[in-house]
Length: 307
Image (cartoon, rainbow, N blue to C red; front, top):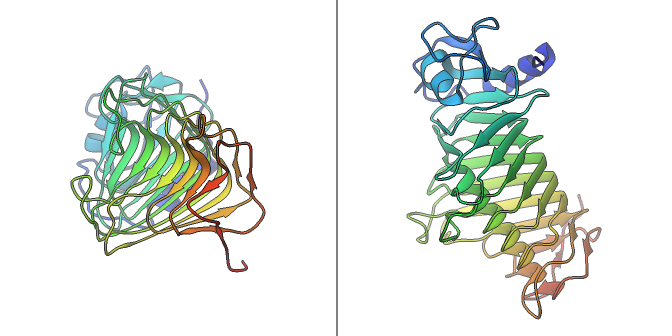
């Protein structure tokens, strides 16, 4: 049985405690363990008596701003996050495999920090979204795999590996060293919206680093939607958005900055592109955009200001 390292636990807890947020959790522990061999019962959460699922541990055991540490490989079930939390798997296979709905819904407070590490999330071809953030102060996802989300009627609000769709507030997100593949809409979709389609007042800033958004049915990385009065800015650094059926990168709202990123093999026939630019794509000139149905559509990318 492989345990999360004390260093990883300390780092994750330090991160989550930066923004204690609104205390929705009923628990009092600063940290708790989960295991596929655990039992959801009052008093669980210690190393020798772990809990079994993320949801029970979030709701009953761990205080807002605390840590859930993973002991071993298991399916830990879907999760609704309502407060600041860190979930860390430091070497096992912390899985969430579901056939419907969202694997992780984030409905946290406006200053809550959510930190997710080492998760393997599978939609089995029919579930809606891997991670769906509608409210939080910040989200960090690292060293994770999110695949196979394909709701029967895919659209911007379903079939995504990660969906960032707050109707209001300020949200910062960071995604690194993560694979998003085989989803029926997008690997990552940043879609500020109210009731899916009308204008949002959200301010969103995101950073993608060493991300693989490949083999998705429409887009690798999409920054689009009905935003009207908020601002959206996403930096894609060392992102591979290749072999997606329609396009690697799509910008339809806000600004998308590309650095040391790749888009190849996107689109089919004369449709689709490596980069779809609606006036807000900036390049640092060090990207590899080639071998697509069309490499860049909608106008040339704008040279980005010097770093």
